Length: 245
Image (tube, rainbow, N blue to C red):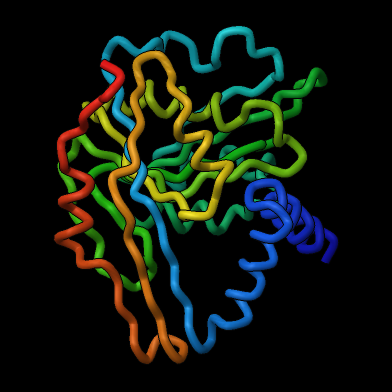
């Protein structure tokens, strides 16, 4: 019960921080209306990177927070970290994700304590060659040079310790070894903090918002429409024009 309350409190704090007070109220109102009408709007976010990106270290230069990253490619490998994953994340959810396909993997961010113990501070779930955002909707096949970031979550206890930046750099290093040079994801159109973070430039990485996609559900899904798969794929595969170069 306490862990569920902690997760709810952490989620509420995150919403207020990322959307502001009024944005959080709008989200709550939308949730109340969702059994009748639910509209989800996202930007397709793309990150492009190349072999010149500095991937020699897992952690950004100057990090002293004790955050380290591990790439986990199978449910069997995940079991080694079972004692480090608390109820906030839940071991079963990560295990089920890894069992869902051969091109899936997880970037685990560990907080290593001075006494030698560790705790998982962040989990980033990824998949190569596919775009899939809505459960129950058809997965869109992509070239193997493209990777989808399904979800990235940081434990409330470790927010503000550069966990996202550290895991992102480890993700790039792994992706380049696999022949991946671009990452697809989604950002809710009203999530201002994520949009600002996406716009920040990093040496060797370029970012772009490729367009909006939408899903509309009426009367609990009696009518269920989403942006056509062909349009989504075309947005992802459209050439990137870097206006700063």
